[in-house]
Length: 189
Image (cartoon, rainbow, N blue to C red; front, top):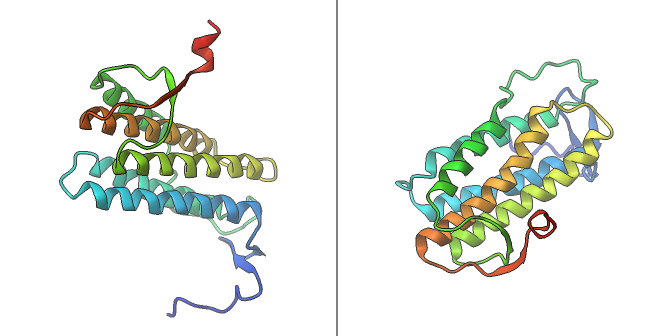
């Protein structure tokens, strides 16, 4: 089977179940943005090296993103059933990892930070912002079609996780965080 079908040459793409939509459809935009984030996570894994302790969790996240994208590619009206697993418990997985990372850091996360620090931290921030963009597109998609509750919860928590991964990398590397401003909920207690 060839990778090219020529069916998308006029600006449409196929969804799970056989329907076709424009390539700028909100569903396709959401999936494409999450795909960009998944590619950034792949680059992060390459930069970390095979023996890095984050590898198993990042690999799990990449597979979960693929499963979530496959479910997002299936409109609720599609008759065909998606047999890929639904990554339920993804938000709990992220929260546990966030808690572990924060327990090992020298300071709490009370501030918005300027992204950067070092290459690994910066890649974590790129993944975080791509996930946030995907989340915004997901919210638009939810307004037009049903989406399993596990997906928006997991996507929301992933951006928190990648913020924490960026901080953990900087803490481990001894790189000072560039603080911008105290979190709003901390300023108005």
